[in-house]
Image (cartoon, rainbow, N blue to C red):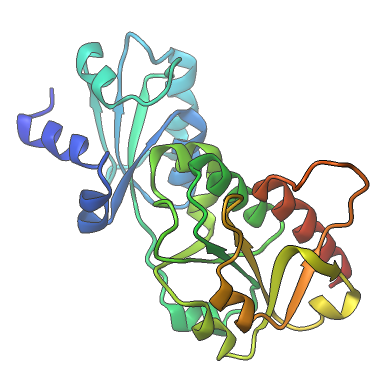
Length: 251
């Protein structure tokens, strides 16, 4: 059984304020928990016998150790925390990785900078693509959706555990460190091989507003994805995947 204090703590992690204070967030489901355990970032696991099959729990067992708090939780309590329609009966508490900006800048990895991306599904999909293409450093403007929002975490499919997420940083700090700023916009030019010769940072804006005017001024080059159809634009997460493929292919 878990105490009222523990229940209150778990519930608080549904709110951004308390996620930031505790440097913790919730993850749900076998796959996310296994990825978090592999990364050494899961501190607690709660399972509901009525919802968690023996097969699902047996899959996470090889990754457990004595440092991880594992407790059974009754169904009516579990349902309060669960954020999925067909839950697997597993919820974990993960530590938020807090990388130092200086270390990220010095690393060999490229960047994505997200300017006012507010849709949780889009942000999660962008993080998933970034991890797939090996772009480890992610900068987020102050008005982006919280990257540890449950919908972002679910859409990210474990990407959070392998990325450096840095919130509330201005783009100019990245540029000051001699990183080429590439801004994605339909008014831009086709991606060329020279765009990926040195370390770069790809800026993506929200579908509603695009990249802010001040960040347009900071950009070294505006790039685009040539198209033949009549639709006005691509989804920002789709655009991200296509552009990353081109940049990585040409590097």
